[in-house]
Length: 443
Image 1 (cartoon, rainbow, N blue to C red):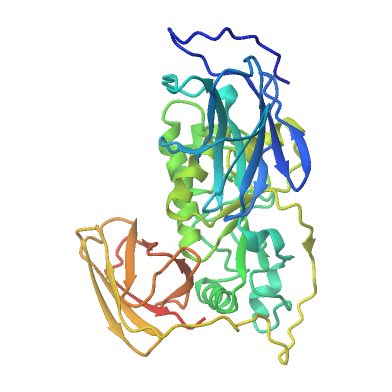
Image 2 (cartoon, rainbow, N blue to C red):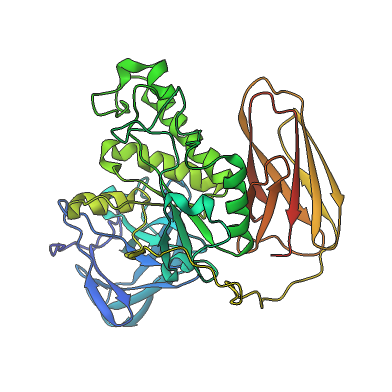
């Protein structure tokens, strides 16, 4: 807890902000804001649009002093801070609040000072910063269903679920006998042919997306000696199959993993369950998750690994989610007479869309097929390498907010991608010159 510090009021020189004792107001349950150097506070958790309020008790000043203050907040990784005023409600009590607009990890702190002018403060002391975790409301309330490998043979017999429930896929990558990922020079970009193929995977993702189900997948990160990453740089792996992400050139290797996550995100995966997060350093997860969320703010990373309280809190601060939900292991049953989702939400009449990209080697055309469906044609003039391409899409009659979910179905393989907002990413493979997507707004 903060120690009391008596500051002398000095209006002629630099005015230091007062030390404060902040209390988080969470439904009348008050928690002391512990700011000691050796403490690591677990972030509070909110959902987007839910106000985050605090009560501040400053000390080290006289009742006659004019005290001002604000609560400062920003998305972790951003440079610009937002500020909301603190309002005095009692002789030694100030209150303030701010509302996180989207899911993600936020930083916040409190400042109070005496006098009219705010003292110049070039940087915020990291020890004064606390975190707020904002999770998707639908995932907080969702039921999580752990699927087994037979799911791809029983796509028409899915577990009965409600809209926004989570279906978590088992490991679908090729593995060796020890469970390490990699076989026949294939790795995290490939599927084990004994489990599924691109056609069955596309059929499943389209069915889930059409019913509003969120898709997650188990994602082990230890590699066998047949993994492409290992084959290209075997000296960077230890005996357990863990890549070196600390030594020289680690950032380029981190980017390789980020590209793998991007590949599966555009396939429709929104949640990654990592069994062994402690194999990779904290800096890897922090940078990777923050980078991915710039383009895909809705994605989540979770783990079932048993962690110490200290490391658990560090991973939450790095971007991992903690939904504290039990996985439902159900037999595959499907009730054809029971609707799996509620589609009673209002739909507006859609008329025309406009698609574009900043990639100079990409040409885009759109064709209206019906009131709710459009054909998106993509011509790739540079197919010499694989890459991700950001597609901007605008509708002339409605605002495509991040809350509006619609779908893009790859007509070459049937894969359905869950899109939201005006910017979404597609992945182009080497040699892929033409792509066609069916944009569906009727789900």
